[in-house]
Amino acid sequence: MVSKISRSEVRVKKHNRMRNRFAGTPERPRLAVFRSNNHMYAQVIDDTVGNTLVAASTLDKDVKAELEKTNNVAAAAHLGQVIAKKALEKGITQVVFDRGGFIYQGKVQALADAAREAGLNF
Image (tube, rainbow, N blue to C red; front, side, top):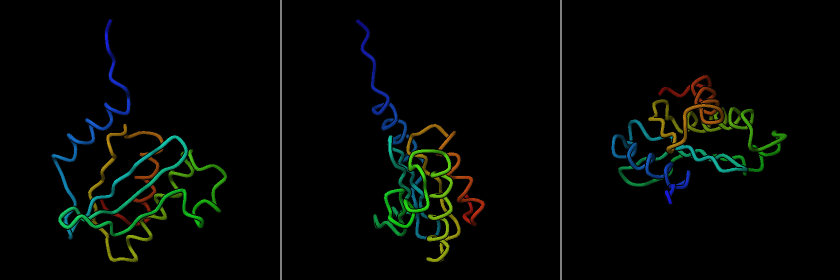
C-alpha cells in the first residue's frame, strides 16, 4: 500500500526549504503569512533577534468587525492592507515575503497584492 504524506506535512517541508533561502533582517524584515481553515495571520518578523515587529490577523476585533467572513479572499485583502498600514506606521517599507509554504494564489496572493498597494515593497 502506498503511504501518502499529508498536505500539512508537505506545506511545512516547503516552508522549511524556503526559510533556508531567506530570513528577515532589521533593514528588511520578513512578512510571514499563515492561513488556517477559518482565519489568516500575518506577522512582520526580524529574524536576527527573533522579534515580531508587527502582527495582524482576522481574529483582531477591529479587523473582524469590518469583515463578513474571515476565511475568504476579501478578508485576506483587508488583512494585507491592515498589516501594511501597521508596518508603515513603524517605519517599515521593505519586507521579504514568506508565503509559509502555501501556494501563491487565492488568499495568499490577495494579501500580498493588497500589502503592495498599501505601500509595502517586496
